[in-house]
Image (tube, helix red, strand yellow):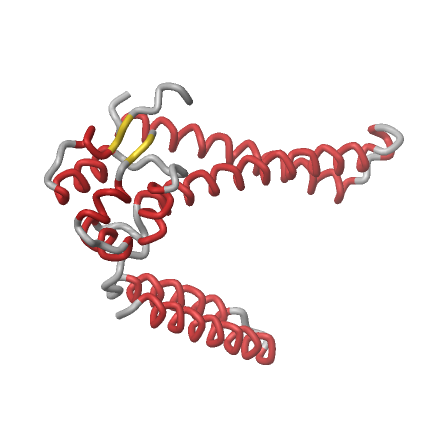
Length: 133
Length: 67
């Protein structure tokens, strides 16, 4: 399979996903949409294996790595500032007038961000070990 | 890092696409290396040197002035 044929397959899968999404909305059941997305990802992954041309190489992998890292860094900082903003808004005039739903959302967001740091440290230790540190 | 890929490609009458296919990368990667925007890994450099039947330092030269 050629690279352009693969991109056509990806476009077809994307149209299929949109159709299933609207079907899910019509029947008010998220299950078909979730299944279609899982099948779509699996389909694209399997189709990619049949491309004869080189699609990924060390340069594209490096670009992906740097892009992923920068996205994580910017997203983390953005969400952290957002969480702090929400908590300060929720505290408002003090602990007595604490806006509970808003505050809980802010604290949950902070917990999620801490979880991301923990996951980052675990993966970092794993790859350090894998690559000889 | 400077390189002489363009010269060796011309000597072997090869297009970027053909060289890319021979060493298992995309044409864009060959273009990026030739333009000095990307330094290849040691494996890719060795693969290119093997393909042109020369040593790695015949193709790639460490540019100490810009370091």
